[in-house]
Structure formats: C-alpha cells, structure tokens
Image 1 (tube, one colour):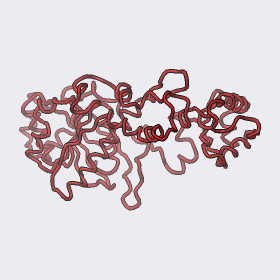
Image 2: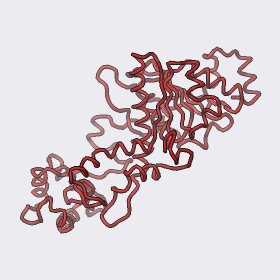
Image 3: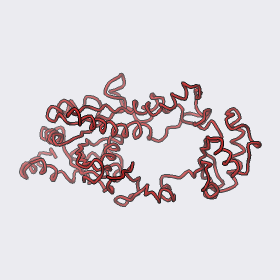
Image 4: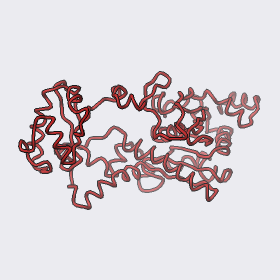
Length: 380
C-alpha cells in the first residue's frame, strides 16, 4: 500500500498495539510509506486494537505468533528489509521476545527503532500500567484544564495518546531518518507520552515564568478565565466558541452582540469576568448556534460554532479544503499536513488482520511449503 507522498519508498514494520503507535504509523502511511502491521496470530490481535477503519488505514497486515521461533524469525526478517520498526510494548518485553533494538539493529544497522510507551523506557514508573489520563496528570498537562472551582477535565485521550504520544513518535522517527542521511546508522527513539505531554505545556510554562499565569485553573487568559475566551450556550442548547483576545477583535465581538465596553467590566479584568460572562451569556441565549454563526460569519470577532466530530465535515471551510474524506465507507480526517509537490495519496482501507500474511512471506523469500508448515504449526 505504498503511496505517492513524501515518504514514498520507506518501509515501516509496526507491531500491533494500542492507539498511540498506530496513530504514528497511520501518519507515516498517510504520507506514502509502506507500513506492514504485525498482528497476533490466532486472534489478529483484536484484544489490542482500537476499532478498525481509521487508525489502521493504509496498512498491509500479517499475523504471526511471536512466541514461536519461526514467528520471531519472520519479524526479524521483516525488520531486515525495513527503514523503521515501531513497537508499543512495556520496557523489556521486546528484548525478552528477541526483537529488541540490539537484536534487530545487529542485522540491520540502518534500522530506526521507535518505542512508544506511557512512562518511558526508564524511571520509577516505567514498568507499571497507565493510560492517557495518568500520563498527562504527572506531566502537568491535566491540572490546568477545566473551569474555576471545578475538577480537572480530561481532554479525551488527545493530549497523551495522540499529541504527546503518536505525533511525537512520528516526528522522532522522521528526525532520525534525516540524521541517518549523514551517519548511515539507525537509532532508538524513546517516545514517552509523559515527555510529549509535558512538551505540549511549554507555552504555559513560559506564561507562568512571566507572571502571566496564576496557579490553579479557570483564572487565566486562555483557560476560560476571561469572558473573551470561553464557550457560551445558545437558545437551542448548542454552543459557540469565543476567542477574541485582541482588544480590537473584542470590540468587534461586542458590537455584533449589541454590547459595548461601557456595558461591561474591562476586558482583562479577570476578577470581574463572571459579570461579563453573565451578560454575554444572556445575549447568546437569545439565538440558536446557527443563527449566531451567520451573525459572525464575515467578521474578525473570533466566534465559531462548536461542532461535534460528526458535524465537522459539514462546515463550509472543511468542505472547501477537503479536511475530511471517506475511506472504506467511514468518514474520517484527511491526511495532514499538505505538500505542494508530493501530496499525500488518497487513504486506502487497512487490510483485514492477517490477510496479507502469505503474500508478505513470499516477498521475503519463503517458499509455499515453508509457509504451509508455518500455518500448520500455528506460527502464522
């Protein structure tokens, strides 16, 4: 399933795992890399995977039992042919199986080995279980999210799994790919969701160091502390998002609401933000979300409708840019970012778990008799 994008010609071997590593490999596949996914033989790894249809797009799939000698050797042979290898095991598991970085890079010194974990490859928590909410909690990325006086709100699993995890892993392996052009050697990428989520808070650390961010949540410029950066409920129970931080945008915002600075406390008087929010909220409650969308459509007031993931494809801007596509009958986000000379190929549905096993093994040089023996032994 290699494509025509900027990564055309790269081969990636992905060991099936949960969301972050598959997301990273989806990005690589979207941009034209050939990605072969290694599932667990027998059940296709179904206990490990997110629902199919999106994160698995653009992949071929083989099913291998890595508890067998033959299964492990198949994975090693795949890695011999690859530029990038990605796994999401707990630290030490790949080494115990015999497919750790030392095992694979001894045979293929140019191999870039991507490791995706929550806590990282070392540290006191490295061997313990966790999920996105735990990783972003200790990274300092969860505490600031929420309204004043209320508990922190997990932002789905976007910050840990996808932003701090999969996206950082994809960036890491591509950086190593660039470095390989001068050294000729691969290296190991230790992508930790804690590290990545912490990195995403760099701006907040800068604000705090400058005295522009108070401790706690809901009392700062960009965490709903101001009336100019929050969501408001409309008459139909739907919401609009307001982000008019700059004073001239805020003035335009108030004008389209039929208000003025004389009606409200000063814009940046966060101690009086509740007063301003109450008055602004009363006005928003007089029209539906779509009616307010029309009011602000041609303005610089920084007001947008809050759309569900299932509505977003209907927005005229997203339609004009093709931000969403349909792949295998499932509407989903299109590849990003965009390239002027080497655009990403149209995504294709991922293969059913294990459906490409015999084809891929034949490409590796295994004869039909050997493949049949592997299947009878349960190695594939």
